[in-house]
Structures are given as structure tokens and as C-alpha cells.
Amino acid sequence: MKIPFQSFERMHEAIRPELTAKFNAVLDKNYYIMGGEHELFEKNFAFYVGTKFALGCGNGLDALHIILKALGIGEGAEVIVPSNTYIATALAVSYAGARPIFVEPKAGTFNIDPAKIEDAITERTKAIMVVHLYGRPADMDPIMAIAKKHNLKIVEDCAQAHGAKYKGQKIGTFGVAAGFSFYPGKNLGALGDGGAIVTNDEEVAKKCAMLRNYGSEIKYQHDYKGFNSRLDEMQAAFLNAKLPHLDSWNAARKAVAAKYLAGIKNPLIELPLPSDETFDCVWHIFAIRCKERAALEAYLAEKGIGTLKHYPIPMHLQKAYTDLGYKKGDLPLAEEISATELSLPLYIGMTDEEIDCVIDALNAFKA
Ligand SMILES: *Cc1c(COP(=O)(O)O)cnc(C)c1O
Image (cartoon, rainbow, N blue to C red; front, side, top):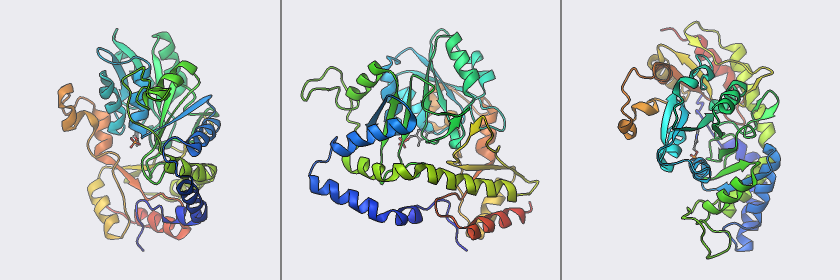
């Protein structure tokens, strides 16, 4: 049996009539940037997350970058960023002109360790960029307390956690603003690139809305040197069709994860933590850890089971970030995760037979 790491086929096939209807509607309207679908999506997404404002933009990286710009965080500032994340989190800080300061995760959770944040704070620190990695909420209570104590802004990178909840509260509502990505593979994905900024702060919303559209509110009147980062009408329309399915898709992801958690029993494999009352995970990625990862990866590939590594090279050791001066050994937990993490197949429409096939293969793995 061939089981890909990810597939959109069954998810999209199930809603093909809704997607084609949206395509036709936009085509017939002959209006392709910031029209009625865009406006509707902003309303729908704000309602879904539970914020006053949602602003469509070009992608998740831009969402985070624009938020930092709107907050006036740039040259000379430091922003705390988890060491274990996708590079976009750090790049948003770099784009804004500030310096990312990496903080290690709490072992087992993959997310930033609140106990290690204070050591990284200096007089230049302006914000903490919290990432809810792999769909699991970061531990927000202690992070909020630290931010309050040191008068720091919290910006949430929600690119991997649409709909996840921390103590019953949706992620994206904890910080001053949050960025979402609708890259096709995310829990809510467009059929191309897309992103959104959410916030309850009217001033931040207004500035972000202008920054994403050439710094303009009134056509041809530019208050800021803004960006061209808009969520186009076609993608907004597809997202309007897909958003009503997000909760059931997240439930489907949780069902796959529950089967993996119950079924995988191999001492060579460390499973991710399950959800509980505090951390309601939406399983963007089901991340296992294995010391013999290369062997496991090859063994699964041999059986036709696709996997990916999130992420094979930690940010601080990427060539792009040599300027920060980090070296191997500086962030041992992030390095260990990038050397041992393996992501299992998880997509909408996965059958029990496919899930069992992955479980059986993992249980039969020997080093
Ligand atoms: C995907 C992702 C982003 C960036 O989103 P894009 O839409 O690809 O720009 C940012 N942060 C994290 C954690 C992501 O996974």
C-alpha cells in the first residue's frame, strides 16, 4: 500500500462542487483583488478565531512581518523566538530589522520553554513571538505572566494551529496580534498562498490593513511605505468554502492522532504528548522521535510510507543565519529534535486501513 505523507485529493474531492462554485462566482464577478469574498473571509475568520479583526494578507510570513512593523518593532530591537520552529518565524523578525533571540523548547512539548525565556530578555527585548508548533498550543499562562512582568508584546505565530485551544481559549487571541498561514498544507489551506492577521486592537488592525496594501487606506493616498501583500479574491473565495469544514477536519486529524497514540508501541519510538484539558492540539503534524531516524525513514519509504522531517536543519545552523553567530551545540534541544524528529502521514480522508498499515509498520521496526 502506498501512503503519502500528505494528500489533498480526498479533502478536495469531497468539496469539489463548493470549490468550483466559488471559482465560477469569482470569475463571473470579474473582480480579483480585495472584493466581496475577501471582505466575507475577514468577517468569517475573525468570527472563527474570536477576534474583533481579521485581515487577509499574502502569506503567513508577511502576516508576522506586518504585525511587527505595525507594532514599531525593528532596528535595534530583539524578539524572542522558539529555537524549534519553521524559519519563517525568525525571518519575520529579521525582515522587520530586529534580531531573533532563540529560546529552547521544553523537552517533550516541542514548544518554547517558559522557564527559559527570562534568561533571554535584555533591555532591547520588545516582544515574544510564540509559536504553536505542530498544532499544539504553547504554554500561554506562564508566557503571558513573563510578558506582563517585562512589558513585552506577545505575537502569536498560528501558522500550524488553526482552531487549537489552550485552556479552552482559541490560540490567536492571547497576544496583541497573531499571524496565520493558509499555505495549502496547513490545517486550513488555500489552493495557493494566503495568510491573515488577527487582533482585537483597533489601531494595530488599521495599521496592518494599510501596510499590507501599499500603506494605503484611500486609493492613491499612501501614509506608510507599505507592502503588496493581499489575500487575493480567488483564494479568499476558496477559504470561504473551506472554513466551515475546518472543525470537522481538525476532528479527523485528532482521530488519526488518537489511533497512532493508542496503536504505536515500539520502545525505539517516542510518541508526542496527547491532548488534555490544557492543550487541545489540532495535529498539524504528528511528530515522533527516534534515535535511529535514518534507518526508520528508509524502512518506511521501502514500505511505501511517506514521511517528512520538521525540520532537518535548525534555524540557527542555517546558512542564511550565519550572521547571528550561532554554532553547533549552542541550542542542543533544537538540534536534538532536528536530528531525531520524523513526521508521520496525516491527511484528511486517511482510511483506517492506511492508519493501521502505518502503525503495523512502526511496530515491526527494529534497529
Ligand atoms: C508555514 C509557516 C509559516 C509561514 O507561512 P507561509 O504562508 O508559508 O508564509 C510561519 N510559521 C510557521 C510555524 C509555519 O509553519
